[in-house]
Length: 462
Ligand code: PHE
Image (cartoon, rainbow, N blue to C red; front, side):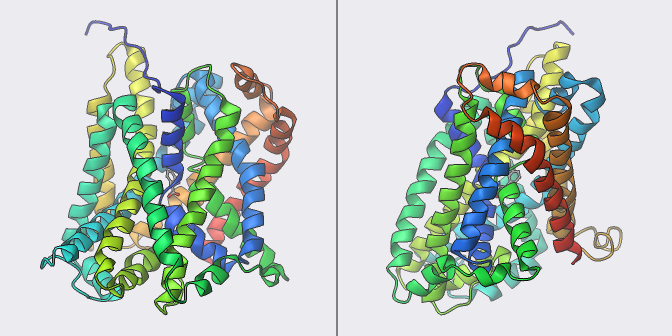
């Protein structure tokens, strides 16, 4: 095979990079995680804590991942190897989590796609609409139909693969440039409807009324774990996504500013999601909940009760969740293939993006099918004897691999090589928060990531 000199891809513009990184952060976590956790864990009091964690740990970890990527010019596996051969294993470790995430994320995204289409059906009075079936009933029917779930998982993943295969700036960046502003506008429209419904104020009070009682006794541990886990997952930390996205940054792009804008935008969208969701939930007389129950049961019942406008808001809402989910899943697939594209370039095989996107995408599809069919009958029963495959994958990725990977990263760059990354941040811009960064990376971030690990294990096994 002749050696080809092919250049590594990079972002077309700073704006494109920012929107892609925000697209990765904004996902299901903002929609079904944040609003409910906010309301249940002290409202405004939780918000303050969340913001503190986002600044003291989120900001710092984002900057670490972005600058590691840009410095080494490599995706996760080669990035760690570049720092030192003995860290290669950390890179591999981080490269594993995305497979599990994409396995269950594409299943959940597939459901959002199904709900979008079903609400579209209602709009046209078609037989394939929801047709007034209550949210819980509709969800029960869909979950029982494993083949249909598998088909939607596959469609969601194929859409992700198509965009990623097109290229970094031609695919991911272009998609985000259109999708993220669209998501913002759709969210605004829904907020206006939601907060003007009669009885909406109960939802606002659920979200924001400060309640410091939740911190009493050992309560603060639960609240801290909830906030920490949310910051971590929502900012897509600990699995090489931002290392990969950072590796495509140009040297004149400002890492410090980007690290601030990403968590800021992510939090704004999470708050907006709260405003879009909770007032409508309360106005329709239902109790708040989080997770799949909120998205696939409660909210469908809300749309059913909105009369003629219901399907319109249904399509808008589920459509925006599909956008949020797909811009996240793209980043996960990119983190997987990025390392192998780099290997290919190094070995002179040229840019093998297309083949790699389809190849690894299909591997992830197999993982998604395991989730949709919940194992393989008697050959693959529930995980560890008690978890569904969805929860099992979530546990492995979010509960174990991501926090451990991030913890080790804080040790490497906070303690062993503390000067390596600040040097990179200095290139092309001032580094105003350098002292703050160094302090937080050394003292706050390791404690934070360790705490997340314990908190996550507790949630799963508690
Ligand atoms: N941040 C995304 C969300 O909030 C999820 C995600 C996690 C995406 C990890 C990539 C990696 O839903």
